Image (cartoon, rainbow, N blue to C red; front, side):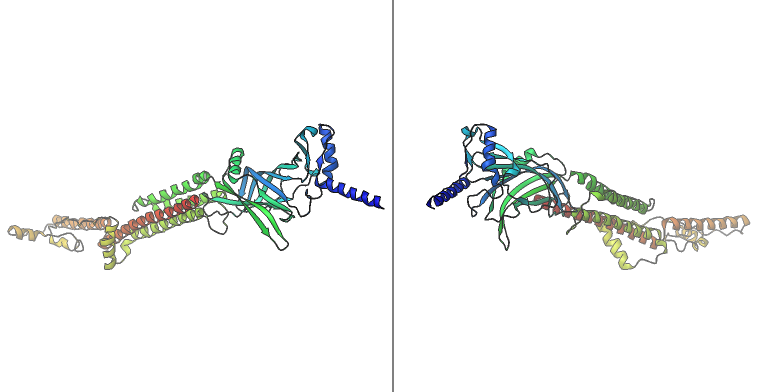
Length: 473
């Protein structure tokens, strides 16, 4: 009975020794000998954590390298990247002699060892990266696991400053099942080292550039327990040149053309048709370039505000042109200009818009026949009869000869020609009321032109300042 208990005690001690101190002894320094030893002492224990006690914690050192930025989808709020993930941990008690086994490390199938269940919390799709079946096992028990990952992760994209936006997306690495008492995540390389290595090996040179990387250890606390995590922040900056060339510069050109259309004379050019053509062209331009614009989220991007302001300015300038055209073409049908409006427009606002006051005409029309005064009584010209001229020079009127038929016809013809001339002058020069309305239209046109310039300058400078502020931050 005593011999049986002694044998059991020796067997138990041997098993504990085998579990806690797995020092491998190779028969020869060959790969076959090392593999045989690993198959007998290490590979069968892949079902549990490689620790001497269940209370021990496995320290997992993690490091990543950003190899490629495949794309950012604003609509689905996802980021697709290609990473190199490096995991390192130790198998407690495992070791072998380099001279006895012939090497300090050996590559073994990943399935033959215990591998931590490290997962990315922001995963949105399965990993479609090529599989690497091997890991390195060192003679000190250190395991080196390096594999590529194609990560489709969720990211809260802020597109307010598009296309000058900077996105900050997080990737949280941690065990899916094991608590912090079982697996503890430890940061590997520093953020500066990760950023430098990533920029050196980055394969993509598309719309996004890697601006920075930061690392922050964290702990996820739940009711059942806490989880150890490492959170990486991937900072991406958009290259805006594509959108500046295809969207912003053409819009600025169209706004500039609409601005200079105010210089077209209303009397000879149909300004409204020109502006309607501009609005139609700008609308077609926005429809064609709609695919380049981001899908709006919680906030409206500044570029959408820019396009809305540009279109509103074009429509406003068209309405202003319609108003001024109506004043210019229908002024003869309007009643007299109210005195307050005439004083406000022609005396004060005309000075503001640098419109010189029209000088009064000094033209004098002389009528040698007093009978011709009646058709011209509404004219503003000075009428001087022949009798008055004779009185001024002191001449005595000659004796009126008897009327001749031919002379009467000439006088009648002269009156008709004078009436025609007065009507032509009235048609081309317009009445006093019509001229005042036309002057008011010109003042309003210049005033709105100045306000148009001021509004464009203030709006665009504000948008540019907001873009610059967020881009610098």
